[in-house]
Length: 162
Image (cartoon, rainbow, N blue to C red):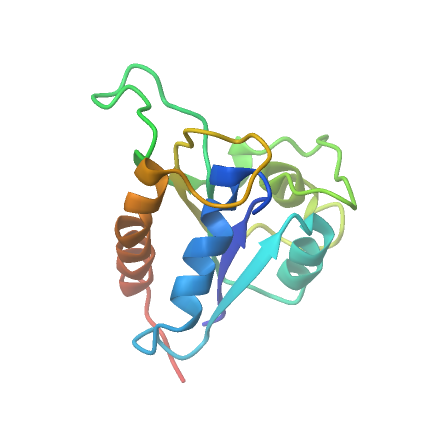
């Protein structure tokens, strides 16, 4: 099984660097099963699209996500959300920016590029601050261990062969 854990986001926009930081931590985790690739894509959406065309069966995107108002945490900064994305959730007409990162546009365009949407999850964190600057805010930094655990849990739900 080919599994890709993709950290996405801009590390120069404070909490938008959440995905790359989780990917950095997971890349050194020796307990991950064989066949799991962990990549910090940053804002390289086309790179992610081309890697998905190579044949990925499970994709775990790690990114900052908007608050989900109406939940028990009401979208508080540092709140984690784990979502399952289905191909019917995606907009195939979304514009793919070769110099930016919009994971929904990347996935939405896969069929147009000749690929298919893999089993896809998002492990997301609600940001506190996405203004220019380097470094995560305290609530988002505190969510990092939980995000790593959520990714590992998702991976444990799939069968790996070496």
